[in-house]
Image (cartoon, rainbow, N blue to C red):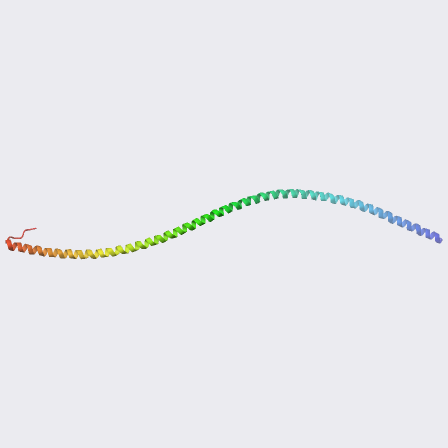
Length: 171
Protein backbone atom coordinates (compact mmCIF):
# COMPACT_ATOMS: atom_id res chain seq x y z
CA UNK A 1 0.00 0.00 0.00
CA UNK A 2 1.10 3.31 -0.91
CA UNK A 3 1.36 6.26 1.28
CA UNK A 4 -1.75 7.98 -0.05
CA UNK A 5 -3.70 4.80 0.47
CA UNK A 6 -2.46 4.57 4.09
CA UNK A 7 -3.41 8.15 4.61
CA UNK A 8 -6.80 7.47 3.09
CA UNK A 9 -7.26 4.45 5.32
CA UNK A 10 -6.20 6.49 8.34
CA UNK A 11 -8.65 9.20 7.26
CA UNK A 12 -11.46 6.65 6.75
CA UNK A 13 -10.60 4.98 10.03
CA UNK A 14 -10.57 8.35 11.79
CA UNK A 15 -13.90 9.26 10.12
CA UNK A 16 -15.40 5.91 11.16
CA UNK A 17 -14.08 6.36 14.68
CA UNK A 18 -15.47 9.90 14.91
CA UNK A 19 -18.82 8.63 13.50
CA UNK A 20 -18.88 5.75 15.97
CA UNK A 21 -18.03 8.13 18.80
CA UNK A 22 -20.67 10.58 17.55
CA UNK A 23 -23.35 7.89 17.14
CA UNK A 24 -22.44 6.33 20.48
CA UNK A 25 -22.50 9.66 22.26
CA UNK A 26 -25.81 10.58 20.55
CA UNK A 27 -27.28 7.20 21.56
CA UNK A 28 -25.89 7.59 25.03
CA UNK A 29 -27.33 11.09 25.24
CA UNK A 30 -30.75 9.85 24.11
CA UNK A 31 -30.67 6.94 26.56
CA UNK A 32 -29.49 9.27 29.27
CA UNK A 33 -32.25 11.78 28.44
CA UNK A 34 -34.85 9.01 28.38
CA UNK A 35 -33.59 7.66 31.70
CA UNK A 36 -33.50 11.16 33.20
CA UNK A 37 -37.01 11.86 31.87
CA UNK A 38 -38.26 8.56 33.37
CA UNK A 39 -36.49 9.35 36.61
CA UNK A 40 -37.90 12.88 36.53
CA UNK A 41 -41.40 11.46 35.99
CA UNK A 42 -40.94 9.01 38.85
CA UNK A 43 -39.53 11.69 41.12
CA UNK A 44 -42.32 14.10 40.12
CA UNK A 45 -44.91 11.41 40.87
CA UNK A 46 -43.32 10.73 44.24
CA UNK A 47 -43.09 14.44 44.99
CA UNK A 48 -46.77 14.77 44.06
CA UNK A 49 -47.62 11.93 46.46
CA UNK A 50 -45.43 13.53 49.13
CA UNK A 51 -47.07 16.89 48.44
CA UNK A 52 -50.49 15.23 48.77
CA UNK A 53 -49.41 13.66 52.05
CA UNK A 54 -48.09 16.98 53.28
CA UNK A 55 -51.38 18.61 52.30
CA UNK A 56 -53.28 15.98 54.31
CA UNK A 57 -50.86 16.45 57.19
CA UNK A 58 -51.28 20.22 56.89
CA UNK A 59 -55.06 19.74 56.98
CA UNK A 60 -54.68 17.57 60.08
CA UNK A 61 -52.41 20.14 61.67
CA UNK A 62 -54.92 22.86 60.88
CA UNK A 63 -57.57 20.73 62.63
CA UNK A 64 -55.18 20.19 65.54
CA UNK A 65 -54.42 23.90 65.60
CA UNK A 66 -58.15 24.60 65.82
CA UNK A 67 -58.46 22.07 68.64
CA UNK A 68 -55.47 23.55 70.46
CA UNK A 69 -56.94 27.02 70.04
CA UNK A 70 -60.21 25.73 71.56
CA UNK A 71 -58.25 24.10 74.39
CA UNK A 72 -56.25 27.28 74.82
CA UNK A 73 -59.51 29.25 75.04
CA UNK A 74 -60.74 26.79 77.67
CA UNK A 75 -57.51 27.19 79.62
CA UNK A 76 -57.86 30.96 79.43
CA UNK A 77 -61.41 30.64 80.75
CA UNK A 78 -60.14 28.35 83.50
CA UNK A 79 -57.38 30.83 84.29
CA UNK A 80 -60.01 33.56 84.59
CA UNK A 81 -62.01 31.31 86.90
CA UNK A 82 -58.92 30.57 88.95
CA UNK A 83 -58.24 34.28 89.23
CA UNK A 84 -61.81 34.76 90.48
CA UNK A 85 -61.48 31.84 92.88
CA UNK A 86 -58.12 33.14 94.05
CA UNK A 87 -59.69 36.54 94.72
CA UNK A 88 -62.47 34.84 96.68
CA UNK A 89 -59.92 32.88 98.69
CA UNK A 90 -58.03 36.09 99.40
CA UNK A 91 -61.27 37.71 100.59
CA UNK A 92 -62.05 34.67 102.74
CA UNK A 93 -58.52 34.72 104.11
CA UNK A 94 -58.95 38.38 105.03
CA UNK A 95 -62.26 37.54 106.72
CA UNK A 96 -60.61 34.68 108.61
CA UNK A 97 -57.86 37.03 109.73
CA UNK A 98 -60.53 39.45 110.97
CA UNK A 99 -62.42 36.64 112.72
CA UNK A 100 -59.16 35.38 114.23
CA UNK A 101 -58.43 38.87 115.55
CA UNK A 102 -61.95 39.05 117.00
CA UNK A 103 -61.51 35.67 118.67
CA UNK A 104 -58.18 36.82 120.09
CA UNK A 105 -59.85 39.97 121.44
CA UNK A 106 -62.71 37.91 122.88
CA UNK A 107 -60.23 35.52 124.44
CA UNK A 108 -58.44 38.46 126.04
CA UNK A 109 -61.78 39.78 127.32
CA UNK A 110 -62.67 36.35 128.68
CA UNK A 111 -59.30 36.16 130.43
CA UNK A 112 -60.01 39.60 131.95
CA UNK A 113 -63.47 38.49 133.06
CA UNK A 114 -61.97 35.28 134.44
CA UNK A 115 -59.38 37.28 136.36
CA UNK A 116 -62.13 39.53 137.73
CA UNK A 117 -64.20 36.48 138.69
CA UNK A 118 -61.14 35.04 140.44
CA UNK A 119 -60.81 38.36 142.31
CA UNK A 120 -64.50 38.32 143.26
CA UNK A 121 -64.13 34.69 144.34
CA UNK A 122 -61.23 35.62 146.56
CA UNK A 123 -63.30 38.49 147.99
CA UNK A 124 -66.22 36.10 148.64
CA UNK A 125 -63.87 33.71 150.42
CA UNK A 126 -62.62 36.67 152.49
CA UNK A 127 -66.22 37.76 153.27
CA UNK A 128 -67.12 34.16 154.25
CA UNK A 129 -64.15 34.03 156.57
CA UNK A 130 -65.17 37.39 158.06
CA UNK A 131 -68.78 36.17 158.30
CA UNK A 132 -67.64 33.02 160.14
CA UNK A 133 -65.55 35.13 162.47
CA UNK A 134 -68.47 37.49 163.09
CA UNK A 135 -70.84 34.54 163.61
CA UNK A 136 -68.44 33.03 166.10
CA UNK A 137 -68.12 36.37 167.88
CA UNK A 138 -71.92 36.88 167.86
CA UNK A 139 -72.54 33.36 169.18
CA UNK A 140 -70.06 33.95 171.97
CA UNK A 141 -71.65 37.33 172.75
CA UNK A 142 -75.17 35.85 172.66
CA UNK A 143 -74.02 33.08 175.00
CA UNK A 144 -72.47 35.70 177.25
CA UNK A 145 -75.69 37.74 177.11
CA UNK A 146 -77.74 34.61 177.82
CA UNK A 147 -75.59 33.87 180.87
CA UNK A 148 -76.00 37.43 182.07
CA UNK A 149 -79.76 37.30 181.52
CA UNK A 150 -79.94 33.97 183.34
CA UNK A 151 -77.99 35.56 186.16
CA UNK A 152 -80.35 38.57 186.16
CA UNK A 153 -83.39 36.27 186.14
CA UNK A 154 -82.06 34.47 189.19
CA UNK A 155 -81.29 37.77 190.88
CA UNK A 156 -84.77 39.15 190.07
CA UNK A 157 -86.42 35.93 191.23
CA UNK A 158 -84.42 36.05 194.46
CA UNK A 159 -85.34 39.73 194.96
CA UNK A 160 -89.03 39.01 194.27
CA UNK A 161 -88.99 36.13 196.74
CA UNK A 162 -87.27 38.17 199.35
CA UNK A 163 -89.47 41.21 198.89
CA UNK A 164 -92.78 39.36 198.69
CA UNK A 165 -91.96 36.19 200.43
CA UNK A 166 -93.74 34.28 197.72
CA UNK A 167 -92.13 31.33 196.06
CA UNK A 168 -90.84 32.02 192.54
CA UNK A 169 -93.36 31.50 189.72
CA UNK A 170 -92.77 28.70 187.35
CA UNK A 171 -92.06 29.88 183.91
